[in-house]
Image (cartoon, rainbow, N blue to C red; front, side):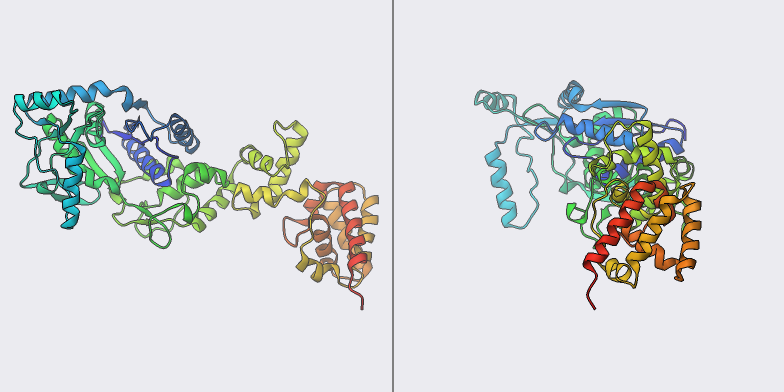
Length: 486
């Protein structure tokens, strides 16, 4: 499909929500699957709520997700003359009119509609104003809005690429505002002017915008523009099928980053919220390039997608296992810094040690936050012993003597490395007449404070002889002091 042009047009009134990021992703996948282009547009005409720092965060989030664009960012706040010019043309062609109704008059109308349990529709009070009436209102100091003259009969039909035909009664649309009294365009009008002047061929956006589409089609019809194709992607709901909110956990891209998710995992997960490459297929892990090659807009579902953090965490653990070790280490540094385990910039020795730690624990973590959390004993000697482990392993007969003997033998071991440590432990357990587990389990608890983790011999090699022996002696002393009296 040559000439495909899509746009992602967020409003900078907050951080990039997972729903917005999913919309950006679907635009990206569709455009590049069709050999098209992506336009980034910042819809920043809501001057009271738009903030420049949100723009910076939004663009940073897009880069982090690797959702790049071909044109832009364009800013609506820098295109105000485009909207004013088009509105003036509609006035000249009698397709729009100035409305001088006061806020009090409109509020009274809304109040009356509420009493009758009806939606308020502007009654067209200013449709037929004479030049003399307009001049009188202007002398009173009234500042008008501009309203589009819309049909009050018939239907406006939206032909949606995902949902099929959706019909809206024109009688329910009223003469809506296209330019506010402060001279700024409304969302519906600015979006139409931009989409059509930027040659957007497909508008792919959230389902919540479907109700805006008939108004936008009426704007386009009045302006004489050719309509783009519309596709409204399903909502993302919480596990209880309520509206997704902060009470359900992370909802913005920045929050997912802060919680230690990798961008590839988040992108992969978002793609499957409403789209599947094969009906009934079980394949779930895709790179961005693979998604582009297999994406089909017509396989996007109509039904709402349900957010499942358990599945996202599973995907993230997969990507953490498969990541290039250097890339994973670089990604993990900020999270190890937050736990005061490292301080950037790392020198070569510190970096290589961190890389070995990550290689040891990556199989057991679902996020980078979790990875840093389970790595603390590689950096800090002071930690609490798991009390269930103490009862199970430290208080077994002769546990203190066993680990002291291990410490004594480790002190003499050459070379001090994973394989030789393992051989020592197996030989020593035979000499002591105990199972290898009777030696390994209290050793793990002694040097990590935990009862589970990476291979114990790998941990001992990474910690080094001095720290391992010191922790074994400290644990033996703890056992002697705390061993329950018989």
